[in-house]
Length: 390
Image (cartoon, rainbow, N blue to C red; front, side, top):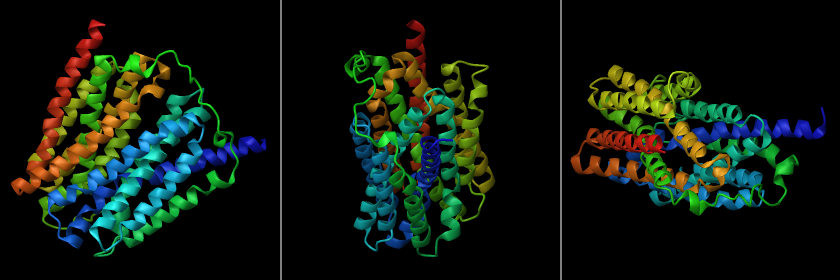
């Protein structure tokens, strides 16, 4: 095995481990909200400000990715993003709410620089099998999301998240070291492949179908962020205690989310993309309704399991529709699709906190998720009809 091959394997392993840790860092916000609620005596509207803080950082990071990609600096983007995630995690331990919010912004900026860059790097390192390589990569993110809550629960003090955030920041810095010390062809500045792609961004985004997919992404990513971000706090409110059991509805939700991603290819043996999305939406609606109607932990856990399975296949299948409709090189023109998702995440998570504050009941805030589901079903009917007509 040559040196270049060994270096490539080390780099690929490091990218997967950083991706796993990024999964923990991404969904950490939902697990630490109860801590900040106690530490700063915040209501739900004030708690909701943490979501726009993180997602606005992620938005800026996502916008910067195009420059890093065009200049062949995706490894540099990953390294910078990992460093920023580490800084953001440490800032969350400040005793001032403004500094904590800054920490979430910096963490989001690191996430926005890291996740898309690693996805693109894995595609470039596995050009013959991009789909399977990405599926394997995103399993690592899901594994990080699964362990995020028990990781926080087991290592947090009664009034402190210093230990889990410090350990996570340290692990991210250690895992990114191979990307710094090992030379790789992907770190050389250059011109992006397919720079002269004949299908321009303008031609794609003149299509109402493209904007329909972007709006669908806005609502669905917002739903996923709202569910993952507020479920832990909602569970605590429902049970009346600080819920730190290992098997929690949040863990069940992310576990079923990852299981659903793993079995999603089987669904396509029986239905096309639109069929899979339509069935998934109704499964997700049932799970969400059960969560809102739950009066005990068991029913809440069952609803979380159903919701996790329902939502698992929707995002990648919607992304697949975009690439199938506009061509395999459409990844260079997909920026609005991802930006809409990030903005939707900030909007829906914040609106849930706003409604909860004004009504005095987080259950009312969770109803935003049902409204989001109804919008998604209407959008899916439109998108399906448009595809049939074409």
